[in-house]
Length: 159
Image (cartoon, rainbow, N blue to C red; front, side, top):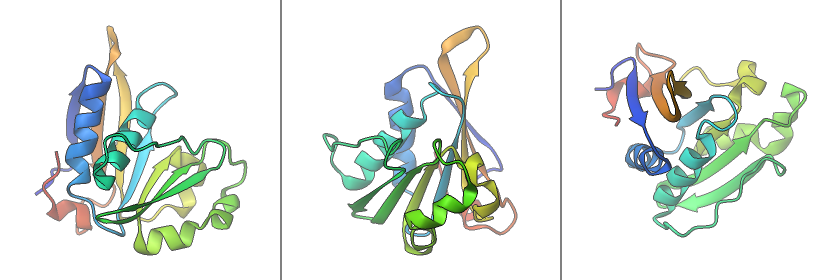
């Protein structure tokens, strides 16, 4: 069973990718992952590794959806929608991107979720990337289920 907070130390992009790959094995349609952290913290590295693991294709081209705002993928575990909300100016813009469809039947991966905070589902996994003090190239990656009492994340074994 998942604890309220899982902490991981990443000392490299390979560490970040391994954490993402381990998490990918536990995902099912309807899951929402919110990647939070400043620029350069490893959110995109994590997202690419997660998508490649779900697609079972380590060479898969995974472009950043920074300009398209959303990319979709077919994976063995179901459809995956990858949102990058950095460039949206109004939270309402997300509904033009297929937001509701993604939340219904896909694994949904969201970078910069704070841009649509009011539209996020209550049952989600927040993944927070933060630098370690005195180690600027190392990261702490925290997995925090937003609904620690009764949500689907509380019943899983996550990395």
